[in-house]
Image 1 (cartoon, rainbow, N blue to C red):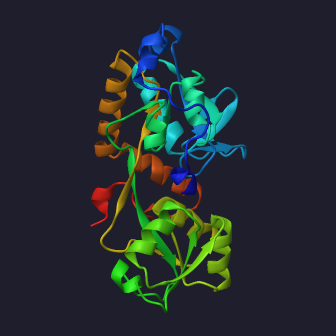
Image 2 (cartoon, helix red, strand yellow):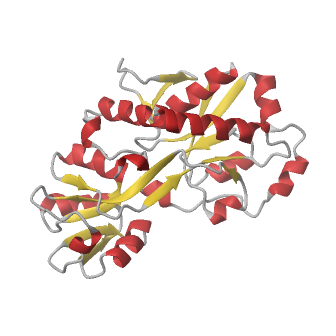
Image 3 (tube, rainbow, N blue to C red):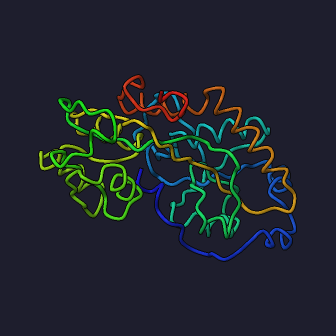
Length: 284
Protein backbone atom coordinates (compact mmCIF):
# COMPACT_ATOMS: atom_id res chain seq x y z
CA UNK A 1 0.00 0.00 0.00
CA UNK A 2 1.92 2.99 -1.21
CA UNK A 3 0.12 5.60 0.85
CA UNK A 4 1.46 3.81 3.88
CA UNK A 5 5.00 4.84 3.00
CA UNK A 6 4.14 8.41 2.04
CA UNK A 7 5.49 11.31 4.08
CA UNK A 8 3.33 13.47 6.27
CA UNK A 9 2.24 16.87 5.07
CA UNK A 10 0.74 19.92 6.67
CA UNK A 11 1.58 21.47 10.02
CA UNK A 12 4.79 20.10 11.48
CA UNK A 13 7.22 20.95 14.23
CA UNK A 14 4.76 20.66 17.13
CA UNK A 15 5.60 18.55 20.14
CA UNK A 16 4.14 17.20 23.33
CA UNK A 17 4.22 20.76 24.63
CA UNK A 18 1.03 21.31 22.63
CA UNK A 19 -0.78 19.17 25.15
CA UNK A 20 -0.28 21.85 27.76
CA UNK A 21 -2.17 24.31 25.56
CA UNK A 22 -5.24 22.11 25.14
CA UNK A 23 -8.06 23.09 27.46
CA UNK A 24 -9.79 19.75 26.98
CA UNK A 25 -7.98 16.48 26.34
CA UNK A 26 -9.24 13.90 23.86
CA UNK A 27 -10.77 11.58 26.45
CA UNK A 28 -12.75 14.44 27.99
CA UNK A 29 -13.84 15.63 24.54
CA UNK A 30 -15.12 12.19 23.53
CA UNK A 31 -16.94 11.71 26.81
CA UNK A 32 -18.55 15.16 26.65
CA UNK A 33 -19.66 15.00 23.02
CA UNK A 34 -20.49 11.28 23.12
CA UNK A 35 -18.76 11.05 19.76
CA UNK A 36 -15.54 9.35 18.61
CA UNK A 37 -14.16 10.91 15.42
CA UNK A 38 -12.09 8.68 13.14
CA UNK A 39 -9.97 10.03 10.29
CA UNK A 40 -10.40 7.98 7.10
CA UNK A 41 -8.30 8.08 3.92
CA UNK A 42 -10.17 6.41 1.04
CA UNK A 43 -7.52 3.73 0.49
CA UNK A 44 -8.35 0.02 0.32
CA UNK A 45 -8.39 -2.20 2.31
CA UNK A 46 -8.11 0.23 5.21
CA UNK A 47 -10.87 2.68 4.27
CA UNK A 48 -13.37 2.49 1.42
CA UNK A 49 -16.31 4.83 0.89
CA UNK A 50 -18.94 2.53 -0.57
CA UNK A 51 -21.55 4.16 -2.80
CA UNK A 52 -22.68 0.88 -4.37
CA UNK A 53 -25.56 0.29 -1.96
CA UNK A 54 -24.24 -3.20 -1.19
CA UNK A 55 -25.76 -5.01 1.77
CA UNK A 56 -22.64 -7.15 2.31
CA UNK A 57 -21.34 -7.47 5.89
CA UNK A 58 -18.95 -4.83 7.15
CA UNK A 59 -20.85 -1.65 6.27
CA UNK A 60 -20.37 1.19 8.77
CA UNK A 61 -22.66 4.21 8.43
CA UNK A 62 -21.57 7.73 9.34
CA UNK A 63 -23.15 11.06 8.40
CA UNK A 64 -25.16 9.51 5.60
CA UNK A 65 -22.19 7.68 4.05
CA UNK A 66 -21.28 4.00 4.14
CA UNK A 67 -17.68 3.06 4.87
CA UNK A 68 -15.95 -0.30 4.78
CA UNK A 69 -12.51 -1.59 5.62
CA UNK A 70 -10.34 -2.30 8.62
CA UNK A 71 -10.43 1.26 9.97
CA UNK A 72 -14.19 1.81 10.07
CA UNK A 73 -14.90 -1.67 11.48
CA UNK A 74 -12.38 -1.28 14.31
CA UNK A 75 -13.48 2.29 14.88
CA UNK A 76 -17.07 1.16 15.38
CA UNK A 77 -15.96 -1.47 17.89
CA UNK A 78 -14.02 1.16 19.83
CA UNK A 79 -16.95 3.58 19.81
CA UNK A 80 -19.33 0.86 20.98
CA UNK A 81 -16.97 -0.01 23.85
CA UNK A 82 -16.97 3.64 24.89
CA UNK A 83 -20.73 3.90 24.57
CA UNK A 84 -20.50 6.73 22.03
CA UNK A 85 -21.28 7.15 18.33
CA UNK A 86 -18.65 6.89 15.60
CA UNK A 87 -18.16 9.80 13.24
CA UNK A 88 -15.94 9.16 10.20
CA UNK A 89 -14.12 12.21 8.86
CA UNK A 90 -12.63 11.91 5.38
CA UNK A 91 -8.97 12.92 5.08
CA UNK A 92 -5.79 11.81 3.30
CA UNK A 93 -2.58 10.23 4.57
CA UNK A 94 -0.71 13.36 3.51
CA UNK A 95 -2.93 15.79 5.43
CA UNK A 96 -3.88 13.62 8.43
CA UNK A 97 -1.17 15.04 10.68
CA UNK A 98 -2.34 18.62 10.21
CA UNK A 99 -5.98 17.57 10.53
CA UNK A 100 -5.29 15.90 13.88
CA UNK A 101 -3.46 18.98 15.10
CA UNK A 102 -6.42 21.11 14.01
CA UNK A 103 -8.80 18.87 16.01
CA UNK A 104 -10.74 17.80 12.91
CA UNK A 105 -10.88 14.24 14.26
CA UNK A 106 -9.61 12.34 17.30
CA UNK A 107 -7.48 9.54 15.89
CA UNK A 108 -6.59 7.67 12.73
CA UNK A 109 -5.90 3.97 12.40
CA UNK A 110 -3.35 2.61 9.90
CA UNK A 111 -1.38 5.86 10.03
CA UNK A 112 2.31 4.99 10.08
CA UNK A 113 4.42 6.47 12.83
CA UNK A 114 7.35 8.16 11.09
CA UNK A 115 9.97 10.42 12.72
CA UNK A 116 8.53 13.43 10.88
CA UNK A 117 4.97 12.75 11.95
CA UNK A 118 6.09 12.03 15.52
CA UNK A 119 7.27 15.64 15.80
CA UNK A 120 3.66 16.73 15.58
CA UNK A 121 1.38 13.99 16.91
CA UNK A 122 1.46 10.97 19.19
CA UNK A 123 1.32 7.29 18.19
CA UNK A 124 0.46 3.98 19.80
CA UNK A 125 3.45 2.06 21.19
CA UNK A 126 2.05 -1.08 19.52
CA UNK A 127 1.17 -2.03 15.96
CA UNK A 128 -2.38 -2.23 14.66
CA UNK A 129 -1.22 -4.62 11.93
CA UNK A 130 1.93 -5.83 10.20
CA UNK A 131 2.83 -5.91 6.51
CA UNK A 132 5.57 -7.87 4.78
CA UNK A 133 7.25 -6.86 1.57
CA UNK A 134 6.06 -9.35 -1.04
CA UNK A 135 6.48 -10.14 -4.71
CA UNK A 136 3.44 -10.34 -6.99
CA UNK A 137 4.81 -12.65 -9.63
CA UNK A 138 3.94 -15.17 -12.33
CA UNK A 139 2.45 -18.50 -11.32
CA UNK A 140 5.44 -20.43 -12.70
CA UNK A 141 8.05 -18.62 -10.59
CA UNK A 142 9.37 -20.98 -7.90
CA UNK A 143 11.57 -18.61 -5.87
CA UNK A 144 10.66 -18.40 -2.18
CA UNK A 145 13.59 -16.43 -0.69
CA UNK A 146 15.09 -12.99 -1.34
CA UNK A 147 18.32 -14.76 -2.24
CA UNK A 148 16.55 -16.73 -4.98
CA UNK A 149 15.03 -13.52 -6.37
CA UNK A 150 18.55 -12.02 -6.41
CA UNK A 151 19.10 -13.02 -10.03
CA UNK A 152 19.55 -10.86 -13.16
CA UNK A 153 17.07 -13.14 -14.91
CA UNK A 154 14.31 -11.96 -12.58
CA UNK A 155 12.83 -8.67 -13.80
CA UNK A 156 11.13 -6.79 -10.97
CA UNK A 157 9.17 -3.54 -11.04
CA UNK A 158 9.22 -1.12 -8.10
CA UNK A 159 7.84 2.34 -7.54
CA UNK A 160 10.75 4.75 -7.78
CA UNK A 161 11.86 6.00 -4.37
CA UNK A 162 9.36 3.92 -2.40
CA UNK A 163 10.20 1.88 0.68
CA UNK A 164 9.90 -1.22 -1.50
CA UNK A 165 12.43 0.22 -3.97
CA UNK A 166 14.91 0.77 -1.16
CA UNK A 167 14.26 -2.61 0.41
CA UNK A 168 14.45 -4.91 -2.59
CA UNK A 169 17.46 -3.00 -3.94
CA UNK A 170 19.25 -4.15 -0.79
CA UNK A 171 17.69 -7.60 -0.41
CA UNK A 172 18.04 -8.66 -4.09
CA UNK A 173 20.48 -6.17 -5.67
CA UNK A 174 21.28 -8.37 -8.67
CA UNK A 175 17.71 -8.56 -9.95
CA UNK A 176 16.89 -6.55 -13.07
CA UNK A 177 14.96 -3.48 -11.96
CA UNK A 178 12.30 -1.39 -13.66
CA UNK A 179 11.83 1.71 -11.52
CA UNK A 180 8.52 3.32 -12.42
CA UNK A 181 6.64 6.40 -11.27
CA UNK A 182 3.68 4.73 -9.58
CA UNK A 183 1.92 1.48 -8.72
CA UNK A 184 -0.36 1.61 -11.81
CA UNK A 185 2.70 1.74 -14.08
CA UNK A 186 4.40 -1.10 -12.20
CA UNK A 187 1.29 -3.28 -12.38
CA UNK A 188 0.84 -2.48 -16.08
CA UNK A 189 4.40 -3.65 -16.71
CA UNK A 190 3.64 -6.90 -14.91
CA UNK A 191 0.35 -7.40 -16.75
CA UNK A 192 2.02 -6.88 -20.12
CA UNK A 193 4.86 -9.29 -19.33
CA UNK A 194 7.60 -6.64 -19.40
CA UNK A 195 8.56 -7.67 -15.85
CA UNK A 196 8.29 -10.95 -13.96
CA UNK A 197 7.04 -9.44 -10.74
CA UNK A 198 6.31 -6.35 -8.68
CA UNK A 199 7.52 -5.65 -5.14
CA UNK A 200 4.64 -4.38 -2.99
CA UNK A 201 3.32 -4.79 0.54
CA UNK A 202 1.04 -7.76 1.16
CA UNK A 203 -2.45 -6.22 1.20
CA UNK A 204 -1.71 -4.07 -1.86
CA UNK A 205 -0.42 -7.10 -3.76
CA UNK A 206 -3.47 -9.23 -2.96
CA UNK A 207 -5.88 -6.53 -4.13
CA UNK A 208 -3.82 -6.09 -7.31
CA UNK A 209 -3.82 -9.85 -7.93
CA UNK A 210 -7.59 -9.93 -7.67
CA UNK A 211 -8.01 -6.94 -9.97
CA UNK A 212 -5.60 -8.27 -12.62
CA UNK A 213 -6.83 -11.85 -12.28
CA UNK A 214 -3.29 -13.15 -12.67
CA UNK A 215 -0.20 -14.09 -10.72
CA UNK A 216 0.47 -15.15 -7.16
CA UNK A 217 1.78 -13.38 -4.06
CA UNK A 218 5.00 -14.69 -2.53
CA UNK A 219 6.26 -13.66 0.92
CA UNK A 220 9.99 -14.25 0.41
CA UNK A 221 11.97 -15.53 3.37
CA UNK A 222 13.08 -14.07 5.63
CA UNK A 223 9.94 -11.96 6.02
CA UNK A 224 10.56 -8.33 6.91
CA UNK A 225 7.62 -6.75 8.76
CA UNK A 226 6.45 -3.14 8.68
CA UNK A 227 4.14 -1.97 11.48
CA UNK A 228 1.00 0.08 10.87
CA UNK A 229 0.14 2.32 13.77
CA UNK A 230 -2.50 4.80 14.92
CA UNK A 231 -2.02 8.53 15.36
CA UNK A 232 -3.71 11.01 17.69
CA UNK A 233 -3.06 14.36 19.34
CA UNK A 234 -0.66 14.78 22.23
CA UNK A 235 -2.54 15.03 25.52
CA UNK A 236 -1.30 15.94 28.98
CA UNK A 237 -3.62 13.17 30.18
CA UNK A 238 -2.80 9.73 28.72
CA UNK A 239 -6.30 8.29 29.34
CA UNK A 240 -7.23 8.17 25.65
CA UNK A 241 -3.85 6.74 24.65
CA UNK A 242 -4.13 4.10 27.36
CA UNK A 243 -7.60 3.11 26.16
CA UNK A 244 -6.46 2.81 22.55
CA UNK A 245 -3.31 0.87 23.45
CA UNK A 246 -5.15 -1.70 25.54
CA UNK A 247 -8.04 -2.00 23.07
CA UNK A 248 -5.92 -2.37 19.92
CA UNK A 249 -3.66 -4.93 21.61
CA UNK A 250 -6.74 -6.96 22.49
CA UNK A 251 -8.20 -6.58 18.98
CA UNK A 252 -4.96 -7.68 17.38
CA UNK A 253 -4.33 -10.77 19.49
CA UNK A 254 -7.98 -11.80 19.61
CA UNK A 255 -8.04 -11.79 15.80
CA UNK A 256 -10.50 -8.90 15.41
CA UNK A 257 -8.09 -6.90 13.23
CA UNK A 258 -7.49 -9.88 10.95
CA UNK A 259 -11.23 -10.59 10.82
CA UNK A 260 -11.95 -7.02 9.71
CA UNK A 261 -9.31 -7.39 7.00
CA UNK A 262 -10.72 -10.70 5.79
CA UNK A 263 -14.24 -9.27 5.76
CA UNK A 264 -13.14 -6.57 3.33
CA UNK A 265 -11.29 -9.10 1.17
CA UNK A 266 -14.48 -11.13 0.91
CA UNK A 267 -16.37 -7.97 -0.06
CA UNK A 268 -13.87 -7.56 -2.91
CA UNK A 269 -14.30 -11.18 -3.99
CA UNK A 270 -10.94 -12.34 -2.65
CA UNK A 271 -10.67 -15.63 -0.77
CA UNK A 272 -9.06 -14.61 2.55
CA UNK A 273 -7.25 -17.94 2.69
CA UNK A 274 -5.27 -16.96 -0.43
CA UNK A 275 -4.22 -13.55 0.94
CA UNK A 276 -1.23 -12.49 3.03
CA UNK A 277 -2.20 -12.17 6.68
CA UNK A 278 -1.71 -8.85 8.50
CA UNK A 279 -0.70 -10.82 11.62
CA UNK A 280 3.03 -11.47 11.37
CA UNK A 281 2.67 -14.54 13.57
CA UNK A 282 0.98 -16.20 10.58
CA UNK A 283 3.90 -15.73 8.17
CA UNK A 284 6.04 -18.64 9.35
